[in-house]
Amino acid sequence: MLDRASTFADPEIVQLLKSRFIAVAIDQAYHRRQQDAEGEFYRKIAGQGPRRDFKKTTQGLYLATASGKLLGFNNNRGGDRIKALMKKALEQFQAPTATPIEAGPVDDRYHAPLPEGGMVVRVQAKILGGYEPTTDYWSKIYQDSLSRDNLWVTAAEQEALVAGRLPPSLQQRLVRFHLIDNTRGEPQMWKAEEITSLDLSLDKGLLSGTVHLETASGNRGYKANLLGHIEHKNGKITRFDLVAHGQFWGECTYTPGAPKGKFPLAISFTLADGSDVADGVPPKGSRGWVRGYLQP
Amino acid sequence: MHITMLCLIASIGWMPLPCHDKTIPFTWQQFESLHRQLQAPADAPWRTIPWKISLLDAQRTAIDQHKPIFIWAMDGHPLGCT
Image (cartoon, rainbow over all chains, first blue to last red; front, side, top):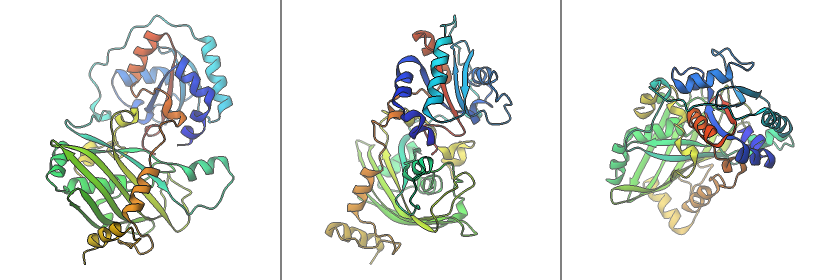
């Protein structure tokens, strides 16, 4: 979130990445653990930096050669530091003699491929008001942020949608894993018992309804209305436009700084067309337990 | 009258009729507006970078193009999650 709007908004850094580097974005919580060629190559690079205890986070920016030699590391934000790091790496860089690493068997614990015939829906959330005015650069980024995640819809659920039904599994997944405030970081997902009420209907392609999510203590919740269009042609979903709009309250350990009291939160859903590399990122809710995500 | 019907009637007349939570009315007009508003601009600088999401894919491309690799490694996927 912060990096997108700071480091990777710097025109010089963006230009350097486009022209002089091969840029890759990964979830290090997976890569430092996974026992396969992808994980081994990551640990080879990260192990040369200061964060070499793979039981802890190795978060940061790593610059390396294709043979795995570390050219630089930084875990700070801000254009000047990163530009200096990149320029220094380029000065040192000599294309090594390296051969492509064979992927080999993958560690299934950390690979969550889209289920066969599955569909990706982009999910984007934004807080529409309630923050105290700020002039702080970083706080402003959080306040203005638009989050990004993906919703997976299985082949069987698409068939149900085409038939005019809204399958319970999709309803549960949508509200438990995607009606969240992830605009400042990674929040906890909703537990099944935190769905206080859920009333969604699909009628002639129009989706509408209401949802009330709330923790047992009442310290976090979301009451929202949902409206949307789901259309299909020749047995395939061609439109999945949906918006949840309502009042959210509370925050989680890793999403501090929410507006005080209740605040308006809107979450949009849009059928992905594969044009964005982020369409290929597994849903946050699937992290660590894909089956639990698909069969909530 | 069923709440969904109330929403549909409201949308036909473009009237801001409350659907569920009395503090936040939600009409089809607002739905269209919010759905447009909640789309990341394609020209956002970070989205113009040709990110890869596989390190081995990046390694192969780095060999082919004689370039170094830039790894953005976060807790949670940097292109998703938040």
